[in-house]
Image (cartoon, rainbow, N blue to C red; front, side, top):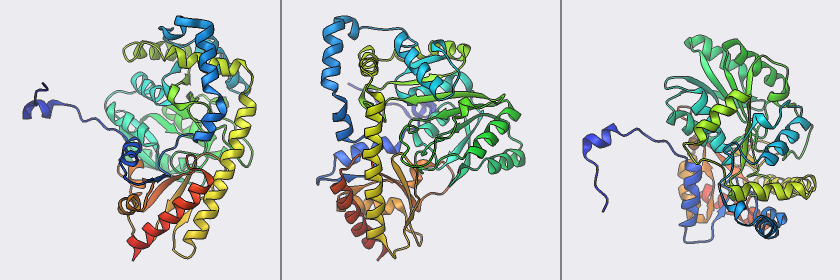
Length: 402
């Protein structure tokens, strides 16, 4: 039987920060009606079906037997590390397999970076709005987070420089999602990427480049990654197979210099010893079959169509209401702004009654006020469900705004 903590014991416990994004999965699951979810940034069911996961898994287990279900090297399967390094070199990032660690999703890679670089009280400069799970990771490691505005060119690097100078702060880390940012969908412009690297170098700070959405571009030209640019700044590059392959496998990666990888591996050995062997080998089997470029092309077309359907549905249902949204060139998200002091948290309560969900803006900040905005993800619902979900959203809005 569980023992109740005494008051003094509770006081000695560290506060642990989680993520409202993940909590929304449970919120939606508990709804009594069939809820259209614009809340979770996960791949569409039809995208997962394209992979042929049953055949991939059966092939791996049939060929490799029990070895596919045992432990593996902490740094990851050597062939997969080599494949990640090869893909990175194709994007201009100079690295080899020894500079790659396979993580249990991008989130573990972020946490490993915190373990290696941060000590309590260190300053982390992050976007605002920002990826909520990363904010929680920084806070759980005792960091002080400086939030910097995101506009239509991504993080406002000039603002970051002003705030650091004004407050006399010396940052240890800068964190950005440079392409189709979570939650805003915005992309860090070419000029700001160079400015960010220059600013980080001036403080001797590391830049964490978290890029799970980079392959999902629907318009415009690719922008050179931070890790591929000439700069004295140290860049750690993080990626994941979750948005373009199978998120449930929890396979991501981190690219950094060898000493950083060595230290991350030591930290990982106290967490899970190694990322799941079967998941890594399923990814490898998909890579070996050579279908990745064609698969990504299908995903781009699928999500481009969904994004356009979401854009049209929002315009149709919210014309003349004062509700506005941005127009990202890729990824899963729109950043929707509400008029007249309407709280997105209040709207969510009513929206759930109407059978539609999203993540309110307050989930993506610590001190900044994004209460009149919310993240709207187009990735999960089918085209018809996008239309129905936005119609329900308008019904909820009318109830709150009346």
